[in-house]
Each structure stands twice: as structure tokens, then as C-alpha cells.
Image (cartoon, rainbow, N blue to C red; front, side):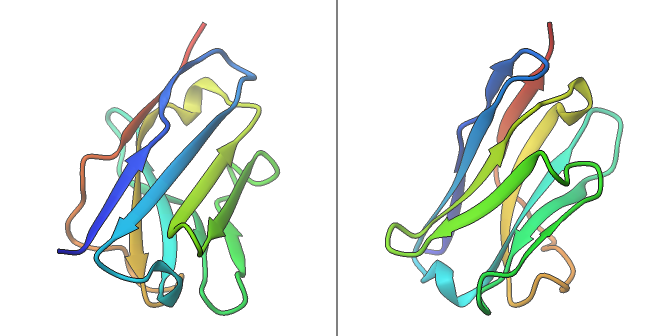
Amino acid sequence: QVQLVESGGGLVQPGGSLRLSCAASGFIMDHYAIGWFRQAPGKEREGVSCISHDHGMTYYAESVKGRFTISRDNAKNIVYLQMNSLKPEDTGVYYCAAREWCTDPPPGSWGQGTQVTVSS
């Protein structure tokens, strides 16, 4: 079975950092673009970042640019999202998803995600 499992979320203070992990099983992650999405309470799910399989090009939402960094470890079949200078508005459930290209629409189904809470 093909699975993507998110982990690494938690409760942090504003200005703190977290590193999220997206681990793949059942397929080779480096054949796909991997994106991170988040959904805050009362808001629509939005794209946060994406890393392509064509030379590792990266993309970021304007709201996280300069604070978040996406990377991949193909040997471990894991994609990371390093989140620094976290703000309360970063709070939400974070999901990862595989697509052929970063420009493709997000999938129609989602896993459990990992909760990120930024609060004093």
C-alpha cells in the first residue's frame, strides 16, 4: 500500500521552530513532487510549500517565504519542512501529498496530518 505519514508537529511558542517529516512507504518518493499543505481552524486548506523531483526546485506560499524550508532525503524517502520564526497564524493541521508536478492540483483525499500549534 502507498502511504505518506506526517510527524513532528507540536506546541511551540511564537518565534520557535519545528521540523515536520513526511515519510513514504510503498512507493519511491523521489519520483514525485511532494507538497505540504495546512488547514487552520475555520479556513480552507492551503498550499504551504512544494519540492519537485526535477532538480529539487522548491516553492513557498508568500506567507511562509523566508521562514520555512522544504527539503528531501531521497535515501531515507523523507521530505522535511523546517519551520522557523513561527507565528500564531501558522497554527493548523499540516499534511503532505504526492503529485507528479508541484503545479498539479492537490489530491482529493488526505491522511491524518500533524498538528502544529503556535501559542504563548
